[in-house]
Amino acid sequence: MDFQKIEKGSVILCSGDSVTDCGRARPYGSYRDSLGESYVKRLHEIVTAEYPEKEIKFVNAGISGETSRHIRNRWISDCEAVKPDYATLLIGVNDVWRQYDRWMDKDMAVGIEEYEENLRFVAEWSAKNLKGFTLIAPFFLELDREEFFMKQVLARAAVCEKIARETGAQFISLQDELDRLCRSRYTLSFSPDRVHPFPVTHTAIALYLLRQWNFKFRFEER
Figure 1 (spheres, one colour):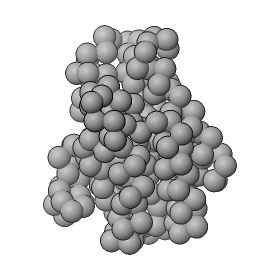
Figure 2 (tube, rainbow, N blue to C red):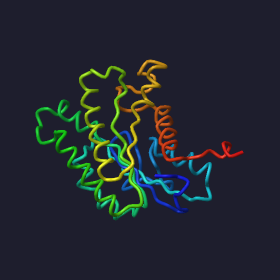
Figure 3 (tube, rainbow, N blue to C red):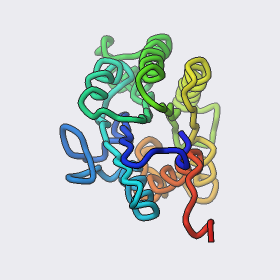
Figure 4 (cartoon, one colour):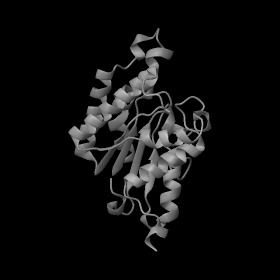
C-alpha cells in the first residue's frame, strides 16, 4: 500500500485479534463510534490530522482471542459488510497461544500448516477483490530468539512472509521495530505480557506502518 497513491475516501479495513481490537465498537469500529485504543486509532488520528482532505476511513474488525481460523471464516463476510478498498491483517499469536493455554481443548489449536492455509485463503481472496492487502507478521516482545514461545511466533512470521511473496500482498514485520524499543528499556515498559502492547507501543506500531506505506508528514515537505 502506497499512501501517496491512495484515493480520496478510501476505506481501510484492519483485522486481527486483541492487539487490533482493544475495545473497539461492534459490529465494526470506526471514527463515528470507537476505533478502540489500538494502533488503528493512532493510524486514523495521524492520517486525519495530516491529510483531512483525503477522508481516509479506517475500520477496526479485530476480535480478541481469535486465531487465523476465525479470520478465515469471517473474512469474506467482513469485507462484504465494510466494502474496503484496502485491508490489513495481523494474526498469529493466538494460533501459538491456544496450543498451551487451552491445551485440553485440542480443537482450538491451530497448527502451522493450517495457519498457512488460512492465510493463503485470505491473501488470495484479497488479491482478487481489493486494491491492496497488507499482511503484518505476528510479533512477541522478546529479544531472545531462542525463547520457546518466540521461536514459534517467528515461524509464523516466516509463513506470513512466504504467503505475501506468493500472492503479491505487502508484508510488514514489526519485530525489528519492537526489538528497538525493548533494547532501550525493559520489555515491561512496552507490554505487560510480551503480547499486548501498551499505548506507547501502539503508537510505535502505527508510525512504523505508516513509514512502510510511504506516508509523508507535511513538515517533511516544507
